[in-house]
Length: 306
Ligand code: MLT
Ligand code: MN
Ligand code: ZN
Image 1 (cartoon, rainbow, N blue to C red):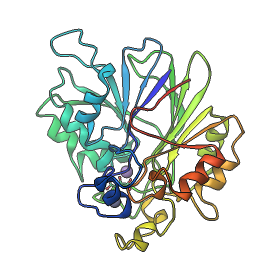
Image 2 (image 1 turned 45 degrees about the vertical axis):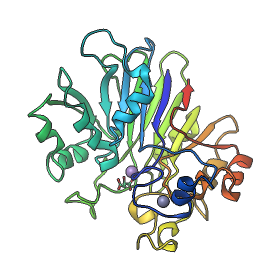
Image 3 (image 1 turned 60 degrees about the horizontal axis):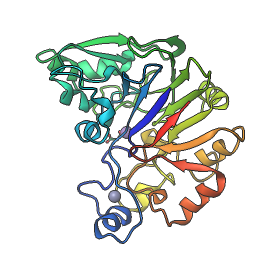
């Protein structure tokens, strides 16, 4: 099983078009050692290595497909390696890329929870709009940890676990989240038995996802903010990270404390990194702290084999 990181940044990407934070302006002026990153998405392939599941459809998907030619096998005049799409939530950065796939020659096979489905047919009716193009065949993603398989992706076992986070700002139930608005995915290699946990939005650590992380060979988890008040301190938002559904890395009960408790052999990767996060600066003290703890920062094009 292969996991390829298509986009390692949070909503807005890095640099963000209208942002002049230290990171974004430092990247533009060339004074910061950091890689640009597109918005949040990974792709997963199984035994046959031709077909891929797209996990989250980022607004940057067209650039991501150009950067990853393996996703275009070229078997027919119109073709794609994307056999299925799995959504961890209905946020803009994870779902609006579906519009860019509207030329598909068959309905998009999209797996999402009932909560995400309600938002993608209601608050942001992407599925209804796409019914005028290629259409969407929606498959129910149950956020209860039950195992499922994706047609065309052989030898990969999937499970979805509800996580504490937030539905999208446009959601009619933004302030009354339901289980399954956001999920973590447990993606298991049928052959090697090793599993990865992918959770780009994780507002608080709860028992089911923590158990899955402890059993995983690799975790790709919420790397949005270094500190809870990061956006407030920069004058960019009035809300702490936790309140918008992202557990910060530093501080008591932060992601670093959790990652430190994982078995020594677990590969630890932060993903969905916001452009304000100091870990993007490869010369920062925060990045050095990650390195000393054995924690990696995902980058676009990173590949993980399990
Ligand atoms: C989030 O992860 O909190 C959202 O994706 C932010 C956004 O898309 O604007
Ligand atoms: Mn996001
Ligand atoms: Zn910025």
